[in-house]
Image (tube, rainbow, N blue to C red; front, side):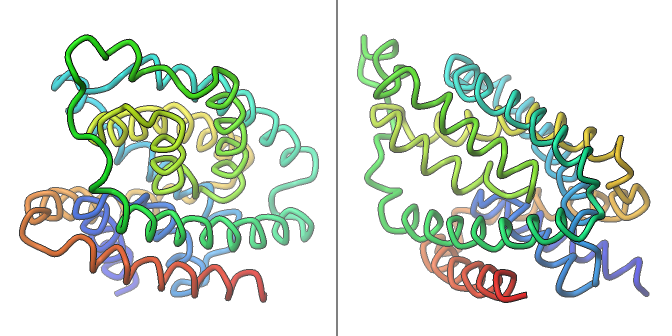
Length: 263
């Protein structure tokens, strides 16, 4: 019965990700902690690889469609990957299952969920105002950030947050990209966000696995449910009011974030 519940949880998260593009970590990690009583360090480690494998398929599809701007991915990765490695080193020294690490993960996760809630609401309100195409001759300019240091700095912050909480590479990443690359069309922003999340979550996920922070049987059950969930969600994307769903999600994420901070 527990196995079916995990498969259904994977299906639900995959469905919402396919429907709205909201990062799976912001949903899966709280579900594992609150509904299944999974320890925070195991929930984070398992969800990182869950995110990596689910976004890998999307990245391949987007790469074939030639809508990933690899320069943007490189800018963010230059900050996020080193930050993830440093965070993993510190976690390994402290011990991911230690009381200090668990407390840091839970509190950071709470704040990350509040940020994700705000980013999700922002995208629900402002998302449609982002350009959807690049003007002829503006391709080079659209891929340039407001300042070359900003993607590296924000990438480092997101890399640290993702490694500690598995949250940050979804709604927060998209919002950051919308601000840093105002001329980049929304489809390319989403594509870049999904693409850079793959190496980041793989590095962070396998780093957690090396410390024993991944539940492999649980990961398999979640993936079994998520694959059909993402497929169905992505096909229903145009038929369900996205703005209403994003607004509801932002409220739920804010509630989960406040509850985690209060633990």
